[in-house]
Image: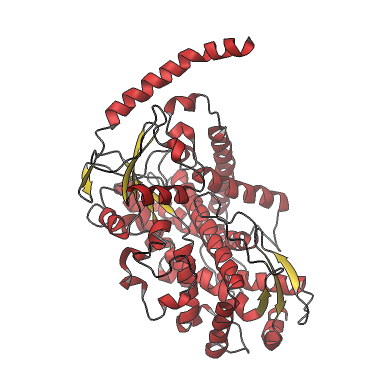
Length: 519
């Protein structure tokens, strides 16, 4: 009886939701009628067809209906493209039109009300943010200034691994990667942004560091999880998933933390700010310091909120994407020992065993670069790239209305059998003698067009140097005879389902070079 009363009480809400959704459906369905589309269900549209992980679901639908298809997520129309030619048309001919981001709930809370670089719509504000990040923070000169910082952090990781192995060059040690790469990148990004490290040794406040690591992981998760309130707006009133409440709480905690960093930089002298414990003793400006200098010139535009938004974007995007790529690279190498051996032989030939690999050596290691390229082909850091149309346009001969969410399935493009031989196989040799610029839209792990990731250069340097040093300094084996589980989880950055575990031991031939690390 109680259940009957409960259902009757919800009946008005159901009809209200039905009326609202049908009105939206009628309004939105001047969608491309000629575009293939599965059968939709009233109210929810095609949400019932979407399973985790998203890129697998969309790839399966593309296999059934074609590389360009129209979906309706509740009241929100979406165009899904899964071919290189369609992606190219979206990001060249229609690049400006698709330079917007959809206004999702996460952008309101995590993205400083859609004013941060990642969530901002295309326009003067976005162009200015992009210019700052590209020229002031991620320029080749700026990255070179932070080189010694990156080297320090990677060498610190190597030393921790030596210590864990008790400097034993004969026996293998079990290593649970877990957060290893994430914490490495978190330290590097935070030292670049604010001059502080929050993982491992020399952490000033362990409780603050623990809290901060949680906020970063939570922010990344909340920006990647599907929120039903984005697609069925009436459900936002109830926040059934509890996601918006978590967003508000996480943003508040992260904002307080970032504000403390900005205030600390503002209060201290330049010499105190720029001291970053560099081995070479040079003084280097942090990214917050650079942004505060811009604030002095134009305080009305470069508000604290703008600075915090830029810093938060850099931290979230730079940490999770690179760490995920490293995880996949090591997983693939463990499952393909012949590739691992070939990469090590190249390093031994080009660099030798008397010194550690340096960032400047990467250009001399084409096979290692091929390993990284093949990793990013199979496991792009952003498998689904989401934009939104600002005006009506045409894709593949199909009319696309303004306000349509665009989902480009890069994971599917990178595994398209029409573009790649044996597309699911890990074969770095396919990239030998090839340049990325000559591949067009067959390989775009960092996106393309105006919204292309500005941190691409830093990401490639970090992944290449870290994986190269791990190959050079240690011998690696799988734990047991079974292959490493390569199951993919849901999320923005294509995480592994199960944490990576491996066996390693220091290479005896590298003993002299490794011992110099701890002198």
